[in-house]
Image 1 (cartoon, helix red, strand yellow):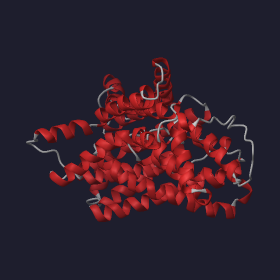
Image 2 (tube, one colour; image 1 turned 120 degrees about the horizontal axis):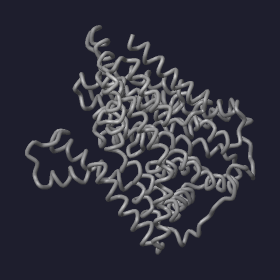
Image 3 (cartoon, rainbow, N blue to C red; image 1 turned 90 degrees about the vertical axis):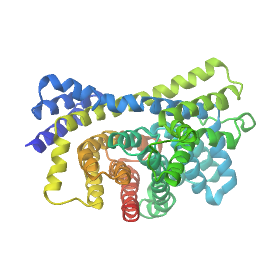
Amino acid sequence: MEFVMLAIAILILLVLIVKFKLNTFVSLVVTAFILALLLGMNPMDVPSAVLGDQGMGNILGSNAVIFIFGGMIGRLVADAGGSYRIAKTLINWFGIKRLQWAVLIASFIIGISMIFGVGMVLLIPIVFAVAIEAGVPLLYLGISMTAALSSAQGFLPPQPAPTAVATSLGANIGLTLILGLIVSIITAVVAGPLFTKLAQKYAPDAFQFKTEIKAVGEVKEYDLDKTPSFFLSVITSVFPLIFMIIATVYKMIYTGGVTSKNPSGFDKVIEFMATPAVAMTIALLFAIFSMGVWQKKSAKEIGDSLNNGMSAVAGILLIVGGGGAWRGVLVTGGLSDKVASLFQANGHMSAITVIIFAWAVAAVLRISVGSATVAGMTAAGIVLSIVQSQNNPTLAVLVALAIGAGSLIASHVNDAGFWIFQEFFDLTIKQTFQIWTVLETIISLVGMVVILIMAMILI
């Protein structure tokens, strides 16, 4: 009966978002309350389940700084011309023949600290200018750009969705980042340059050379001599990752991947610096200096960049919080435990089965609801008890990545990303399905294959 109630709540959520175009955050919170009542929870316990430590508080409390500071870092780099420098430098290094790879690498670096929509807005004008100069269709370079941005969004902390899912499942953020880098690099390559060759054969009409695209508008250019250096721009963009990767590798080598019961002074320093919120705070302070003060920007200009970065992430942050509300109801209402009991009743679940199940749940939700963030957070709540019952830290990381893969599959008309892609690349609806929907599905399926291979090796 509980699963029927869950299906009804998901259907209501789908109707509110797709049919009535109600704000996604509002829809999530409203349907979280409805789901709690459908599950028969004590009405007095519902507010704490939705808003408390198991719900929105669990996700926003620990991740708000990561999300907002990440958006600010990305905006500081962009406004200083650092993103322009990264793109132009790599393009000059790689040359015309390897433009796709230059765009892929530049987009991946920038995509680490910038949410998908903002990354698209920032990079499209640069890539469009390069495409015109090289005499190639925008889509020829744009597929690689989009694949890199989408792969980073799906698998890499400090991006909001993978960070929130990993936190929800109790997965180690540093290990999620390291394994996520492997998955995202492979998926970006397959869904980028490799997929472009296939797409040119079955959808040649989409690859038209154009010198003007309405959605792109005026191409903003910077004087390269007045932008930050390539090295400084890259270091600032990836700075938050440095501490987390160093600490994770250090712990894997010296403590077997667990926190020491009697940590030395150096252990404590490493642990402190690698805490995601601390790493992001240090990284933001560095970005304010490297992309602001060092570039002789005024306090107002720096403040404007910080405010714009925060505004860009605010909507995503609220959606993540709404997904956390669903998580709180699923856990407090006992549905997550029932899912775990259902599978345990049929024998011990193998790690592979858990990973596939998590991916499938996220995939179904993604196709139904549209939002990758909503799909990921809801799936995390459903499989949480299964992951906890396995008591395997590495499995928790792989499940978080599998949910990320599932949450990207088969984007279509109920996903904002579908329309962003269609508008920026000036495509028909049919062409958007042929390119964008297939691209997202490739990332999901290839990512899942890589994750399963990792599971066979690591578990």
